[in-house]
Length: 372
Image (cartoon, rainbow, N blue to C red):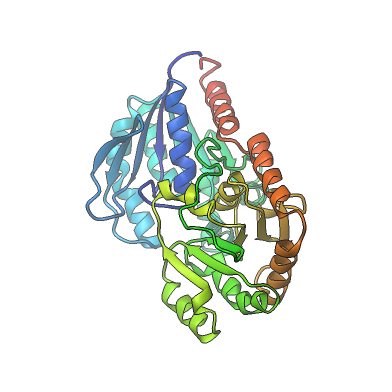
């Protein structure tokens, strides 16, 4: 290994928050530390009672003020985190902004230290805002700011480059720590019914409503049950919808679960459904695949880049009847287990965290003149 690199990440959310971005940044940071590098993370104090500063698996985490979970709160957190980011940037070799809200404090850090700035554009929220005239020039300036940019899907990369013509944004799908996400003993005992898992936070864009609407149609064909892992503002409405449709006893809303539980929960199921209306590269889908689950996913965003007929199936978003047919056909097929094994093999070959770490270190080395 070459020189020890001091890396400063900035991201709005970080564990114990649960989600694709949080998982991506945590496992990337942890793996960089395991390779002998130093990683500090500036993030938000997004939950009551969590410490302002702690070390997690060798990653030093600094949490700053966070007022609310909405664009105003993200912007306020971004501005409020500038002093901590600037202070830590003085000792950093590389600063890495994880998503658009992190670019502004990361730029402030670069001004203080002169360290090169990398940004990764993750969220599908960006795709919606990129369509609005008010946001386009703001997002364009943020795309131009880094010294090198990555995007979690080809779609996000293309939109980002259209916002800032002449810039280059490299598509680089998020990775999965396959030593952690793997088939393990089920946390929920398996019964006679096939069990479907929907690992989605309950926001409108994640399309869980359409799975709930599809469930009665699936039950007309097959005797199944489902679990939804995640929480959010849609939960009450979705539970009421399940009751209204007569499927309340067949779908269990488990709420937010600790990251450590996810391999066991995924391994308790037979099929994962990602019914998103918009999506980057879904870390949740990759984590399910790494646990040998076939995946039915919406044909949107970066999902077609990871899911096809060898590992699952695609369905058009927002169409419960089509989703029900796709799920039923896959569950009734003869090679569900084989598709699950193929899914894990694909993740290990294409989207392992080791591959992700290798590419990040190549980018950092290039920016540091080959000194990594």
